[in-house]
Image (cartoon, rainbow, N blue to C red; front, side, top):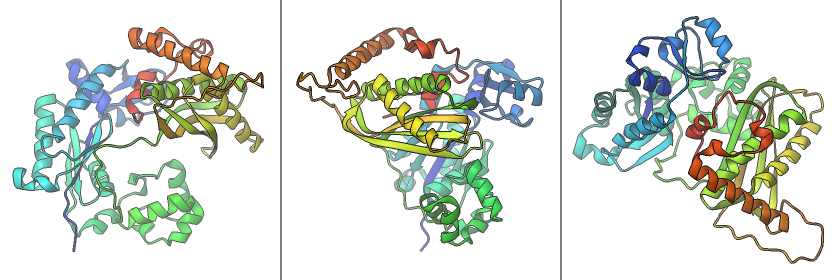
Length: 415
């Protein structure tokens, strides 16, 4: 028996650029981009010229000479994103927000109040447009994965419903890059196998996908291509990890690049941990090279950490180990840090002053405790005067970052 299509995926279209055009009527109908050195978001008018998020500003201007850059109004993005996603709550309490501008909603229990899921989706679109002035696309299907793909097919500013029993036919001719987990590297590897559509992927033996993409990714994609997705809409997530990443372009794998980048990432991650009274025992780093291949390294500690300097030092050791295993790689394009095995309200066990070597990374050591005290003082200053009021010298003096931290924080998963 087919499962009813009762899951909505709502995705605000070209959200940051659409907000700018909403707030400044002079920008409507014009190709605009949020950012400067790097395109953080592009309007549909700019996308028509090939301008894309993550593109260098110089390249974007070459593609679209009339492109107009705006700096971004991040408080407005958050306000309008909250308001749009909040409208889903008028139809069902089962809303799972996954970013500033998109969310899932399970409306199966609301049909007796508001009609069919398709009618609720139409109502959401009307209200977002009428009350907020923003375009939004929705997909309606029986699974989360299918609803998300349907909303992508619906763009811009549309609605696609996948009736129960038609799922495989809907997926068959769609490109594989619409699927969760298929980025540029996976897409290229699948193309080498002659796989370009989801239907072709579904017909590919699972063992073949696992050989090319790895067991975890290959197995997941095989299941999704066959429309097997048992995940439910979850209204509250318990965070299992906290992470941050920084795209570098093509930079030399030197300490002059790695050290300040990791300190900046550790500062972002550790501050978020401390804000929620958390610490973590497992630290993982990811290094992506110029050819887009990547490696990860991790370590599990005896005590949970949340001090910025300690996290940066641990991450630096892991990155050095990864680079030592790949001596031919001279350029890196991305660095990332994540912390997992989180503990709530960690209370470091203070160590006896036995005059042994002071492991400054251990939270219970004298130096570790001092580091945490200093971090909390920094947190207090930032809470009062803003994040830019104080920072680490090597990071602050490293120049302005192409992607502002406030933009990264909107996109990053919160605890």
